[in-house]
Image (cartoon, rainbow, N blue to C red):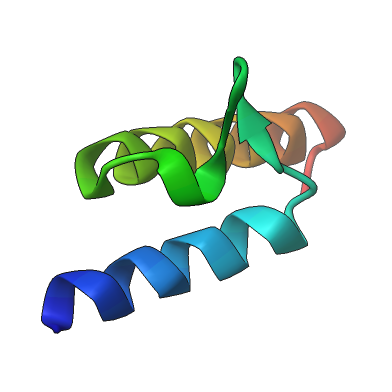
Length: 55
């Protein structure tokens, strides 16, 4: 059950960030490790953008 809750949490966070798919696959089709990878990728991009803006 813990893995399912983590997947739901990641999907929710990714949806809030505007991510709905990875390639041709919807988020709910991805494994937990795939979701974590996408999540970390998005967070790194967000950090990079903040650094570029000088925040």
